Length: 94
Image (cartoon, rainbow, N blue to C red):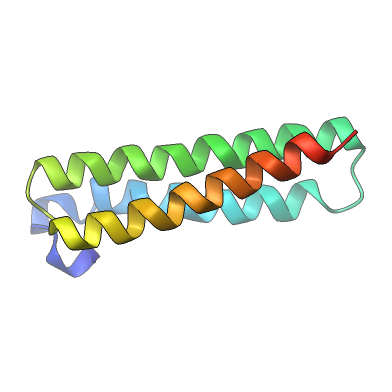
C-alpha cells in the first residue's frame, strides 16, 4: 500500500501508519511480559489507541486519494476486528 503514496507522503503519513501499526503489537507484547493486570490493561489501552490512529490515517489516505476504496475497506475491516479483539481482551482482565 505504501508504494502507492506520493513521494511527499512516504516520510510523513506513510511513516505514521507504520509507527502506529508497530505500536499496536509492541504495546501488547510489552504489556503481557509479566506486568500486573492493571498494567497490562493500560498497555492494551495504548495498543487500542494506536489501532484507532491507524484507522484515522487510513481515512486521511482515502480522502486524499492515496489508496483505493477497496484497499481502504480491507484495511479498515482488519483493524476494526483487531480493535474489537483488543477491547474484548482488555475487558476480560479482572
